[in-house]
Image 1 (tube, one colour):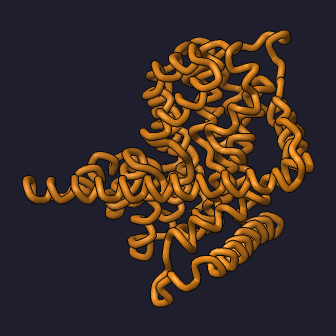
Image 2 (cartoon, rainbow, N blue to C red):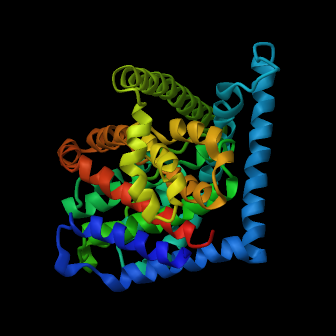
Length: 393
């Protein structure tokens, strides 16, 4: 049965992407099938082989330990303010992001992450036949985040075509920043976070190949990565600390605003229509969830979470999902969890548009014009990743 719903999910994603394709005649099916095969093999290996289980276990334990160490720093500063009877989301989940941000800064400072990105990107380009810049952005977005990644290629942003720009932005929106991965792992199972990050890199490129197919000439296939102004080690530490704090505060502010807004909308809908707004969204998304492999009796609940992520953000959706996950089947939990691990939501349109506009105003205007199509493509990438996850549950 999993194979049947895998087929229906793939068909749904392909049709929805095909309907908005810029150039249907030149879709590169060979590259798409190659990336899809890699995703299937990778997911199977991670879930069913000793090596894969070890890798997921190691990464999960590593982030759990990092969160634990980060909380020790939080406790030193805020220990007297924390309610010992209840976990504080801001103190125990968001503030440890600062510590993880420092570690990312150190790995970048000693050129460890850039080397990994370079060689993994070269391997990816052999599989998908796409440009160096496309593969660099796809990988770097999963580490640096959807807006920060463009700073490293600012010389090329103003030079790339509109079609290439769409692919770059789709990859950025489909990714997540590794700095907040630990926070995700406190709300959903770590193994699904790890698998989602890996799947989303290729899912975004697959969708881009359908929606936005193009060929790159050899002279266009260049990658110019900006070298940051060399700071001293301790300057870098200070910058990383401030970057981590900014992320924590921004996420906290968005949660305050979005959760209050959703509660207000729910209250109004319940008062007028005697049904909550999230329930309505659940019914709208239920057929999509069902075709991805989620049992029909759980499709409305799953659909409401998927829709919540789209209209708010992944943190709001994960917090809601955490409360209901215990009442759902393992298959539903896995598919929804993978779907949630990305930046594909309406607010990300503004974030990416602003990031590109800050580097090149003309290109920023281009991104703004295809903003909804960008969200559409990155949401399809999340659906594809969730569908592949369902095949193995």
